Image 1 (cartoon, one colour):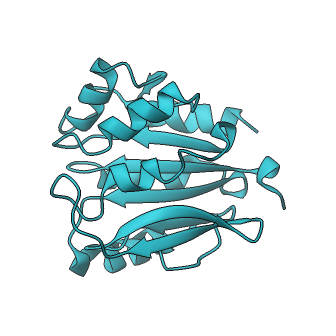
Image 2 (cartoon, rainbow, N blue to C red):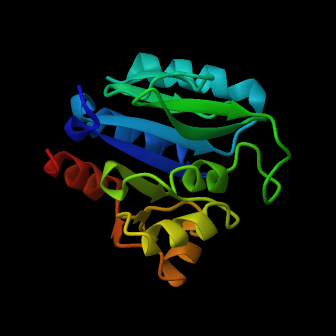
Length: 191
């Protein structure tokens, strides 16, 4: 399978996003997508959350680990207290896990995940910013938008905390503002 056959969704999220992410994973056609998630969550919870999503959604969900191949039907949760990046090695997109200092107080950082794809083909990646407090991910999603990536934010009406997504929208970094149901419909319309 080549990267022309699927897309990689990058999700940045914080407060209130856990049920939204589960809804997305249950609705998106897994055979056409891989999903990478940077969720602000302590290290003691990310493994349990990945296991829960693996048991309650059609995706193969796990914590991201160094060198994991990014393939359709797989979803990777950034491990707590680590940063997750996308790298390209041996004609394959893979996960890189690093232990650098927090960015904007966060580790994992949405900005670290999003900025890791700056040099890659915009049509392959879809950055999404969901509900959450703070502005993590905003700078990088604005930059990705400027580079031609299609960017998506969760709408105000369905957000528990209209913060990260609000800031990204107000700064002009978002192409489409959707409810979770609308996101699922949009992603599934791509294939």
